[in-house]
Amino acid sequence: MDDTHYREVRENGFVRLPGLMAGGTLARLKSAVSDLEDLARDRTVSSGDFILEAPGIGGWAAWQQGARALTGVLRSADRIHEHVPEFDAVQRSLDLAGGPVAGAAGSPGTLVNAFLWAKPPVVGSAKPWHQDIAFAPPSFGPEEHGIVTIWVALEPATERNGCLQFIPGSHLLGLFPHTGDRERLPGEPPRAGAVEPHVADEHLPRTAEPVAVPLEPGSAVMFDGLVLHRSAPNTTAAEPRTAVSFVYQVPRPSWTRMEPAVLARP
Image 1 (cartoon, helix red, strand yellow):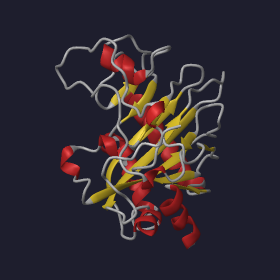
Image 2: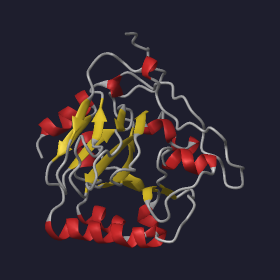
Image 3: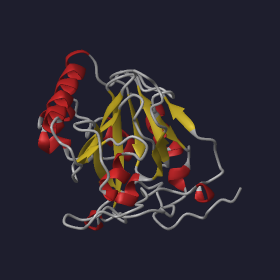
Image 4: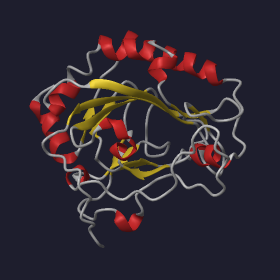
């Protein structure tokens, strides 16, 4: 990978990594996903680590509102490298922290989380515009650290089934206000009408048009924790979109700014 890729991360906030995983490595990742799905197969309600899909409302909102979800149908899963250690073994075997992440950020990253992002056909819900660093825990220290994520497609990710979309250059503008409800803590009652945190349309920058990033299986997109991104619902009848992301803490890149964004008006 040459410096052109890293320059794209610095300038646009994201870059494609074609063919990052192939052959046996991709097979290992798919097998780990199967093991993870087995852990959720009999679940009927969402928890903090396993979010089930819910038609018409979306997995996150259904979880917060205590609404009925689809048994065993995952929308997302958190800390997957702890539930299935093979995920950690795969990212280590490729040295993602010391390779592409270090190239983008200037120094190696530290894996802080890994996620499954499942978007089943027909019912796969949208993910609204957001910045990942807005959800970092208070102990993260955003003034000292940044986030670099590598998002790997395990099946074709297309505009029809909900590939990621980014606003180029938005990572240079600061932290945008996020509207919505915080996740309820364990033991807290369901929250009627809960809205997933997101950046409202009126707060989005008008500096560039959104760019969709379709990916083939095994290809990835690497992006900065401040870049605005989203994914549309899966409107296909039989094309699942499954992906795994590895999230790395890095020293705060020199191009980022953590002060509130200056909102661009239409």
